[in-house]
Amino acid sequence: MDIYDKYIRTINDFPIKGIKFRDITPLLSNGDSFHQAIMDLNKQLPTYDKWDKIICAESRGFLFGAPLASFNSKGIVIARKPNKLPLVGLKESYDLEYGKATIEIPLGSIEKGERVIILDDLIATGGSAAAMKRLVERSGGIPIMGLFLIELRSLEGYKALGIPTASIVSYGLNVGDFIQVSNGLHHIGKFVRKIDEQDIEVEYRDKKKEIISKKQIINVVQEDEKGRLTYIKYRD
Image 1 (cartoon, one colour):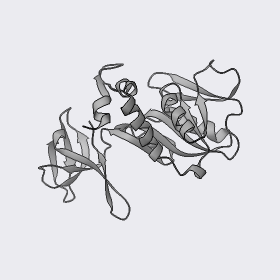
Image 2: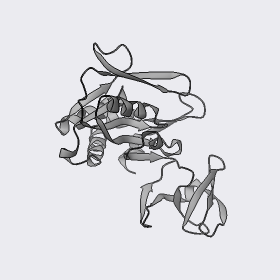
Image 3: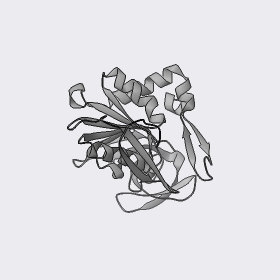
């Protein structure tokens, strides 16, 4: 079991019924796992001379953005909730499931031409990350990538950003994902739909379809335009 399987716990039906909440508090409270998470995020960053600052969202984004910025001797831009900053430069609103939220950045925190990493602990639908991207652009900066500890794949938040994204831990499947299958009709199939909490439907290259258990999934498979296959660890 790796540190993320061990120290990120899933809380069912929180904050509302039907939601699987990925709780990172055990990871944060363990020194070794928190350090490993920072190092794993750091490995995803561009080379030192290709970026200038990190913008991160209140409040869990601060926990990862601050040590990363300090470790790389870079600046940090804190995107805060309303009425928290003494001098507000810009603000952006974005949609929530119920209502709207707003984030604000300090006056003069991003200069024209600065290359900025958009960071948060988790990307779901991508609303808050896209709002940070707009703040960077409106400031004259250049958003160059999104970086997240956790990605909820089924919500496809990367589409809201439209820039390269990276995450350390992924949960779930996107429709159309290729998966490596154990004891199926073939070794690799395409995720078609969720049947229930235990089973999914897959379609193989010969167009045959099969209902399999999630326990049969070995890895998520990504194929590039040249046919090269790479793997993402599957977590439900």
